[in-house]
Image (cartoon, rainbow, N blue to C red; front, top):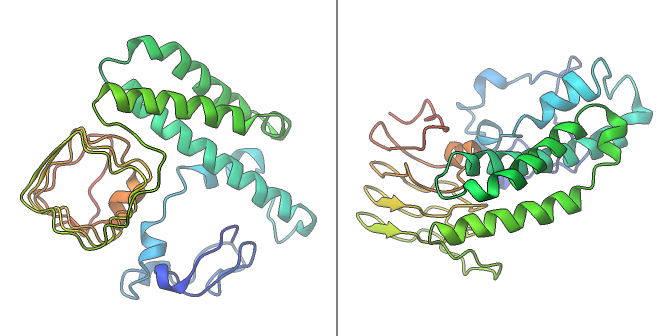
Length: 244
C-alpha cells in the first residue's frame, strides 16, 4: 500500500505510492497470496521489509487501520518508510557484530543500534529520531568494515553488469556494492568477502556457488536470486523453497 511498484518488476500492476493494490482485501490481506508463485509475481514473493511493517502495525500504530483513519494515512506511510530505512541500517550493523576484526567498532555500533531501538518506543521518539545522522554514522562504519575486509567500497556509480558470465570463478574481496547484476551467472563460483551491499541480484544465478563469507547480503536479495541445494549461504540467511 505505502510503496510504489511496477508490473515490470514482478508486481500485479503499475501502482503509485499510497494507492492500494488491486488484490488488497478489506481486512488488509492479499486475495491471491497463495497463487503469487503460480502467477510469477516475483516482486511480491521476493519483497522483504526488514520487519518494518510489523513494527508499524503491531507496535507504533497497534490497532490503527489506515482505511479506518484516513486522516492518519499519509503520516503512517511516511513513518513506515522511516522505519524501513532504520531497519536496513539495523540489519547491516547486526551483520557487523558477527564479524572478526571489528571489536573496536562495537561501542559505536551498539550505540547506533540502541538509538534505533529507542526510536521504536513510541511515535514521539520516532519523530525526533535523526535518521540522517544515523545514516551518516552507519555509512562510516560500513565503509570501515568493508575496508578492513579488503573490499574498497566506492560511492561512484558502477557500470551495469547485466547477464554477465562470472561462473566457475574465484572472487576474493570484490566490491559489487550497489552494482546492477541482473541476470548474471555466478554458478559454481567461490565468493570470499565479496561486498554485495545494495546490489541488484534479481535473477542472478548462484547455483552451486559459495557465498558463505560474503558481506552485507540481505534476505530480499537472496529471494530475488536463483540458487540450488548446493548454494552455500551465510548462516543468517535462509534458502528460498524454490532452491532445490
